[in-house]
Image (cartoon, rainbow, N blue to C red; front, side, top):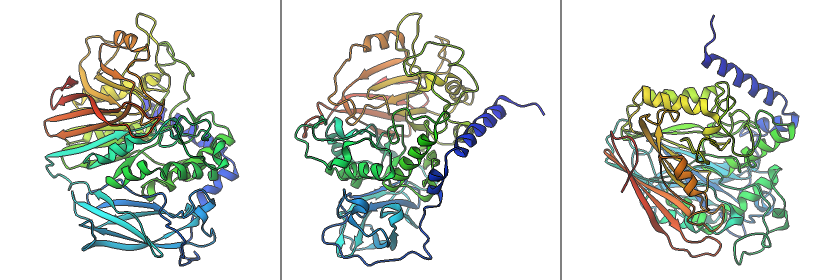
Length: 530
């Protein structure tokens, strides 16, 4: 039988992945089995001296009849296991109501907070009404959590008149205050997409932090992450930030990771046993601290984070994972065009995820097809003239994968294709082209890249390189290096995108304003200034 390019890609990526997992070592493999046994779990009724809800509450991954509710018990947030007895599980009640005062309980139940999962609770609350706002809370011992607000997705096939959402990324604690997250919480949103780098792996101390007036933190935070306990401690710091707690309470989040949840540009294909163990630690701590369902729970250093969400007939969202399955990066610095960059055997998504993504695009009956993901998909040449330079970690570093997606959108006339991107700590607005090698190629979509919440610290308007980027990329409409997030209003015939920016992050209390707005009209590929 003749092997196709797709068959070859699937075979090669599968063999590479098996080789990595096969060499992971017994210590990392143990994570697969270190899970609670409900039949034999010892349960203890809690007696807390202070509130166990120091990390707040959150909801996420809304479906038409279900949503995930999350919390973690941690009366002493920086103590091992939050100061709780690691030998016994704790029962936690949860409630969903149609009103903020909980006069009418729509759903309720009890979940066990297991020490194996660091006393985190993930409730997959089902049997809910489509397209409906609910309020939720948790009860443990004599303590009641703050109230969170969430919303289910609309019914399948329903005609949704509008959808209000936002996306954000790159959330470094040491780089500044999470003021943008609080402003994000003040927006009236149906859902928030978080596109990665929820934490950074770096050591944190009051002496090295760029947060002016930062309170001291435990000495254990003064070293970089690596062990499971150290990753858990990092999340305890981030999740206990008041601005982040507030943002999570206001709307459901659909979250995916990038690289800093493990380490910067972490290796996959060429990973050592220590690298794989570190990834297993990081993946586990991530799941424990995010509103994710059991299918996203990692098995050692592997977890399926790519998944799809349909909001009636209005929008199909395909959330991607561009880190876990990619071929090795070609370099650490910008690269020229080369046969290696265009090698069809190199992959950004891996064969299985790529097939899933392209199938979702070609089978979609939604008005808008939107891909929330991590790194720039559109071409961004960083050097004007004939000597092009491309970021090796972006889709430009995996040109064959990039072109397969763009060609699929063009050849199948995918309806209103839009990409949402994090990672770059900059705002970029680009047209997506069917073939960037052809200057006259058709525009087939739009990409909106959002800046960081804090990473890079206080922003600037221009780092001295924007003129080169504009000159080398005629499809680049706008760029900014300030901090903030991106707010979107979607209707059947129009997508409006507002870039919300704060003037500083190193001191608290910054206001927020709309720096620039853009629209995409349904049926007209490409971006226009609003």
